[in-house]
Image (tube, rainbow, N blue to C red; front, top):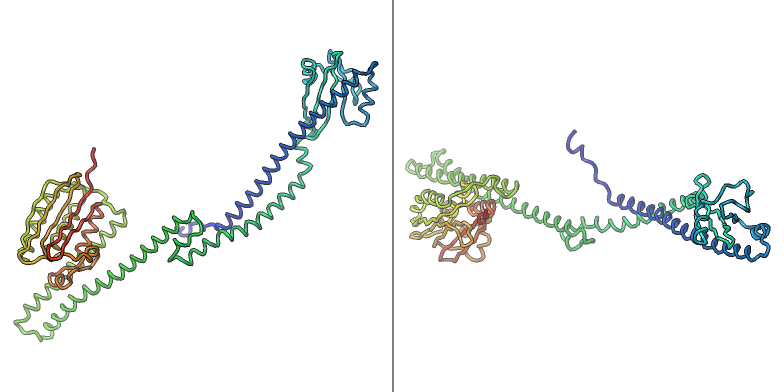
Length: 463
């Protein structure tokens, strides 16, 4: 199976919102119903106990006030009532019951309400019938004779009440689901519409964020959009610059070669034309080499912007090596090259750092004047950070161009660059290598006085 086929389709936010709202509505109904029933049942049971206690005390008072108390008076008082009256002797024997024959009833001495009334004067309890779904509330009062008068009232349990209202509860849930679905449809449309409209205004997406939570997303989209536009602009400019830079030497090579091929060139001019072809070919080779190196550095940036396995590099020996390699170029340009290294070590790639210093030195020689000088220095600053510095007394860089000299193909003096064979990519390569080493580039330049470029690397971590 291809990776594309194994991917699941993205879910619609509107469907998730609707399902969430419906679920919240159902949970609210169920929890409210259960909580309300529990609270109402507790309040009802408490009221039953209070009423039962008042009635029991009243009957006890009436029974004791009768000069000749009899069970008939109790039965007459309970006529038409759903309450159950029981008279219990001091030993727990049932003397009279309003619903059953007393002789058939078991001893009530250990009943909780009877025991409580015997000890404290009054007692109550609740017993449930799991089979009938009913519960009976009892309240007992101790008489002056020591006998116990008990009243009982049968009520429905909370769950039996639920069974009675279950159809109504089901209808209510169905109504809630319907209303929740309608409300969810309206709310999701109202909530999602501003998000979908964001796609219509990508240029100003950060200024039209409907919800605060979407600000990071809008910022990321805007940054990515700008980055893509900048990359596309750079790609077009790079393609145009490469085409232009290659076209010029190719035109020269083609022209000289054609003159030689057709025999139009004089025999004495052939060596001159050959020399020019060789010069333009060398310029193309340098340009292609710089382009390939930039492409490689771009690839390293995309993989993490840092070197995978940095090694200690002795900057002093590196500067001496570059000084020896660039001596011939300096002599051809009538420029004095001096090297003043101090002990300094940096973690990085020796090849890339050699390329960095070489490009800085080549640039300093190329944009200098006959009789000028270039100084190569390295060392550590007061914070312990290693640095490399290339200083010249050449033509300098105008203030308005100093921010652009590290761009690809940007030249301050195009005529001088082409005369000396510059590709316009040297400082761009320097910038890429510095970024890979987490280094900072500082440029100071004055027109007619010279330029100083200093690359400072991170200070080593203290162990």
